[in-house]
Amino acid sequence: MHILMIGGACKIGELLIYALEGRHHNVCVSHASQTDVLHTNYDTLCTFDTIIYLVNDDALPLGTLQGKKRDIHRLQLTLIAQIAHESSQKVVCVHHGSDLEQDFQNTDLRMYRVAKSMLKTNGKSQLFQHPKKVHSIQHLNAPVEMNGFHMLKRYFHYLSRVTLGLVDVSMDETSVTLRLKGFNVDLIRMHIERKQTFQQVLTISGGILVSQSCAGRATFRFYRVVGQPSAYTALIDFEPQLPWWLYRFTQFPLHSIVMWGFKYDLKFFRT
Image (cartoon, rainbow, N blue to C red; front, side, top):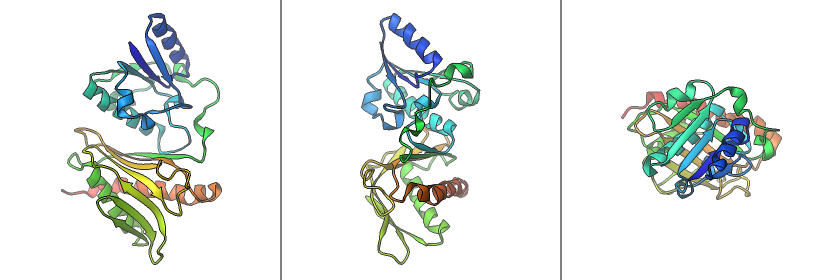
């Protein structure tokens, strides 16, 4: 059996690896220092018979995280659950607490609760190995009938309104450009990838607020959870052009405030 283990750098991870390999299973261990679910493509995940997800810091993407860790785990598990459902894979989630059991009680995920100490990451956390790489993830409540592209359009309409028009949003079917009103300079440019029902991906291609090292690789994503009034926004692999200390006091908290407001803006959505 071909098994993928995510977040295996903990006591229970070591015990599971020892037991599974002792039964001649092929175990591929994905640590935070390697890949994570947000960077692993669909075809790669489908190659495994079983996916074991251990809820700890080792399962999170490397870099500076914005948003609740619980929401990041929920998003990653949601993506795994959707893929597993389509490809008839087994998914095992090992966690502590009861929150995740409630979130995934109507899915095919097999949930096992253990003591928190069993999931504690071994050694020093690697989350800040790439501190200038930012991942900002938020959980939102959104109407079931709103797909990823409609949520994208709603967000940029909200962004223009909440900034009182200071941020000029230029959007067509293939791209979004943000400019400061009165200035013919692109703050952020994004390319809209092919429309999908349950997710919409924008690739960040440039702008004066974007480091060239992440242009074409950083993404801004809108995810829908199938059949539920639940959604996620995810800024992945973003690296700012501003000096890091200035970014942390300006653009970083402003993005958090804007996303907090968007969460409440969706409450007033009407079809």
